[in-house]
Structures are given as structure tokens and as C-alpha cells.
Image (tube, rainbow, N blue to C red; front, side, top):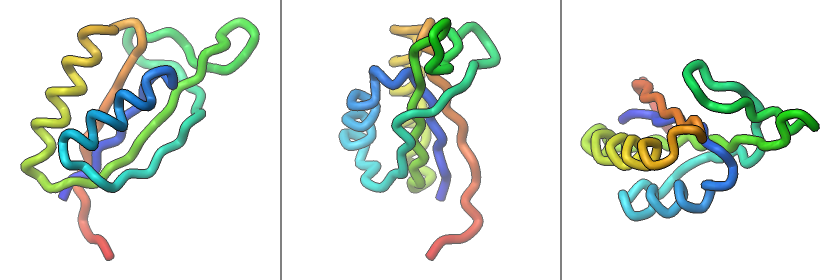
Length: 97
């Protein structure tokens, strides 16, 4: 099993959820309002007067064979909207209940 952590502009929350559903990734935990700044070219998402937008994040745990499919869809989405600063990271899941 692998965990995929996804951070993205909150305006695209439903599109990310829909993509996970179409990829048969049923379970997830989401944080609809998170603040942060990407390490590459993304705009800050602070929820402040100067930087009013916020980000969202999702953590989903999936079977290993689903990871390449999900990551490729996320790459395509990010390539369409590079200024939104979508990021995704994959972690090993050691144990689960």
C-alpha cells in the first residue's frame, strides 16, 4: 500500500475528488482549507489580504498498482494549470488496521 498526499488550489477540490473516484481510490482524508507556499513556482496560498487564496489537501491510501495511474492524472492536471502549484507525494504505508 502507498499513501498519496496531494496539495492543490482549493478551487479544484471537486475535480481532484472526481479524479480519485474515477481511479477507484475510494478512501481519503481531506483538509479543505490549508495555507502554504510551494517550493517551485506556485503562488502563495495564505488566505491573507495580500494572498487571499487558500489550498486544500488530500491524503489517500491505495494499492501499489494504482499509484502510477493517479500520479499521471495529477501530472496532466498540473501541466494544464502550472500556476496553481499542485503537488503530490507518495509514501510507503508500513501497516494498517
